[in-house]
Image (cartoon, rainbow, N blue to C red; front, side, top):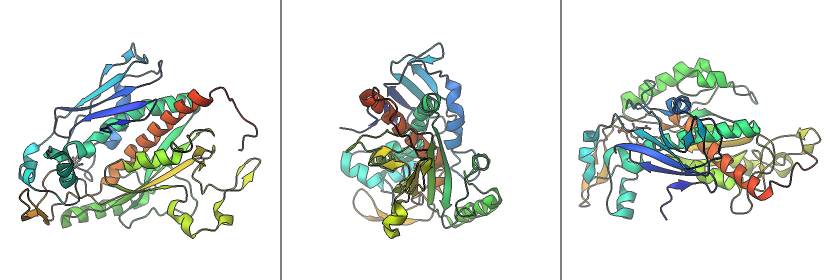
Length: 367
Ligand code: EPS
């Protein structure tokens, strides 16, 4: 009923609120024998964390992951893996005034309507803080996907407000550049422009939206379950479940509308597909091409500029948001989007193995 569990065979249940004592997850169905220690989570958690640059929320969380179960002598045992991260820098008094009002653009009003009660501190369960655990669970998925299939999942910021990467048409992404700046931006020379944009937004008390692209390379053909468990359908649901996401595209996405069939269909040659408008998925099943997904994130709703709303009595009030917020939530969304893609792929890979593991490699293999 409550939808805090994600995945069928690699099932991740997250729990916790932004200002509660801790956040955590339980991963059930993880294959045994994967090497795992608490230090493995550090890199991806730091990529997602607040307070790592001047351009994101200045909440400084330790983000240390404690492994409570499911690992013995450095290897997963096949039993449920429980991970826990203590919240160490919540400042709940910033939210005292908000307990009786609904912040525009937030989940405050809808949580109130659904449950009749809510934890207003730091956005409670609706906070992006919850995504820490998605990223932690996906560290295990990324390890397995890479170890078993050579799959790699990489994301980058593909637009921030109206700023787009200054890349020649069709140019590849240099992930060393992406990882070398706090924006996950693929063009190093533009980083000062992004910094100036965030500084200006902060000064104006406003925020902007963003687009994040993710690719997965090395995905073999065959993953995805038609018709209701299509790979693209599950990717769309997974990516849409990330806070602030308002749009998802696979491959050519909404550009497909203006294309013609002769252009969009990816012709097949003995040594590979002639193009990849499908984003690596045909009929809901991976084709063996790179998987390509893109998400649109709305501008952060928590901004210091006062806005109109109502209080619990339905009276008109002016809301002024406090707290330590991101002028562009999309900046920290790259590792989160990668995580959701990795979780979907791992779950689908295990499901494919369960049903079709005996089929073996089918000829011809394109590419
Ligand atoms: C968030 C609001 C802010 C962010 C938080 C997400 O919380 P607070 O006002 O308590 O600082 O800092 O992000 C995180 C703590 C995190 O780890 O991502 C929100 O409303 O989603």
